[in-house]
Image (cartoon, rainbow, N blue to C red; front, side, top):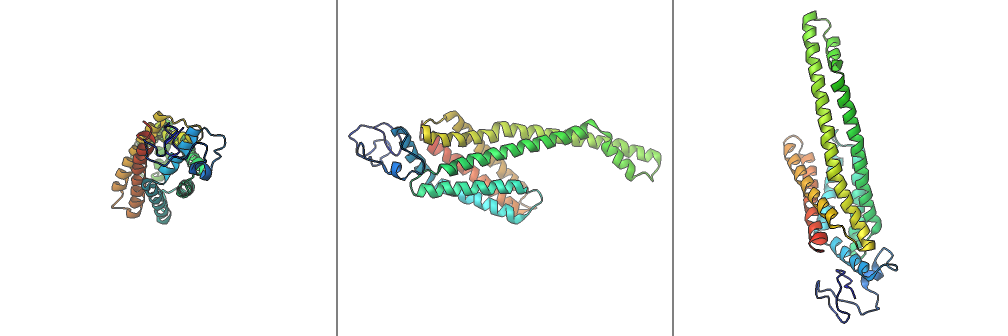
Length: 281
């Protein structure tokens, strides 16, 4: 038979799992996980029911609770700061993300796995990826416009300085053209960087969340996707931490919000490694 907590195969006569130490129900007796799980365990293999128990145990971890608290703090500070660079759409996605996280945590306290919450977390991450692709499109469009039409800013300068001498205006036209090219290059560079982050970073985290969700049902965890997602959680956590330091003097509230996000991502990376990588290998 299989342990209802860790999913490992153990001797049929075992009363305690020799691997995780959990109490083992007698053969044929419904396990606590099977009785309490919010997903339908009727069609699951015994191994999958054990995975449900292990997931519920992972979501009860204090590390996961810390992630929920820190993400909630970051969201609250972002809304309170009302900074011009805070997009309403991103705040809505963050709000849904936090709600789904708390749904998962609340379910785990009842020894259940809230599949709705898990699918919601994965879905909000996918929505963020889509928004980032839209941002890439706008950056690329503006970059092409400024880069391909270098006289754009030059013409604006010429209109504003038309009361000056012709040769002086010509100098500003030249300067304006150079500025236009530089701005176009910056936009295109940002589009490339955001594209790389989206393809390799955010999509990796989304795939990690998706494989967690499907693992509850089919007991098949794709370790490579979990490792990639864990790595990018840590990387984005460090980047957010550095970003928080750069704005600490000018915007303490935004720095605290970004710092809270950084801490949540780093802790999430450690949590994934503890429960879904080292706990499986």
